[in-house]
Length: 241
Image 1 (cartoon, rainbow, N blue to C red):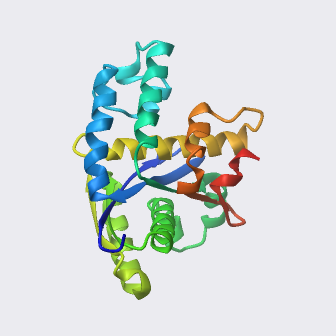
Image 2 (tube, rainbow, N blue to C red; image 1 turned 180 degrees about the vertical axis):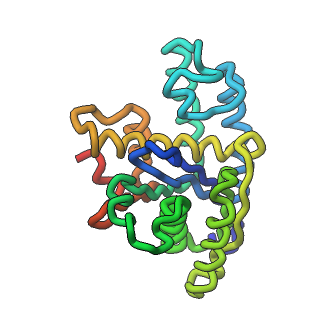
Image 3 (spheres, rainbow, N blue to C red; image 1 turned 90 degrees about the vertical axis):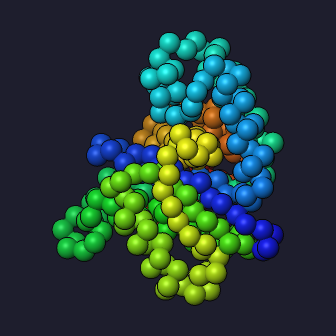
């Protein structure tokens, strides 16, 4: 593995002001695996009459999915998960409970109060988990968000400098569009579902675990996720309890 080139594709969820959960997450795989993955994902979209995939639109019947039937949506998500399950991917996601974060950060007079900080904290979590678990250089590609690009890039290079034991594994960072890089759509699926399911687990525990989350958890041995609240961090495998 250490001689292969790995790429991580990451997206975010919950960066709007009213969101209770902010998350950053995505998938890491070898460059060769992404070359196999991309045409499969594209074929799944085209075979179901979709041009692209954005889970928030899909889940809320908006945009390109506004007039889709339940059967159409079921067939698409089934085919997309089939592609995921055929692929050699490792998933990572870090989340923050925003009401608790804001309560802790309020009045601190530190960088924690900056709007980009929750995004950077989740980004940092993903980088640390990847460096601990993947013995290879990883190049990071994040979905383009102009507001967060600069602080996220700065955090990446600061981390690379401060933690020399991981420096060699941190190959670089870039921001791109989902329309340019199809694997970012798979990252969108992971991070949206992770954030949505964590929101339900914390704020609406009477709801059953979402079907998409159950499908993701079938890959639990290749998923690493945690969330930060006022007390600390917990792993994604506990979300079913």
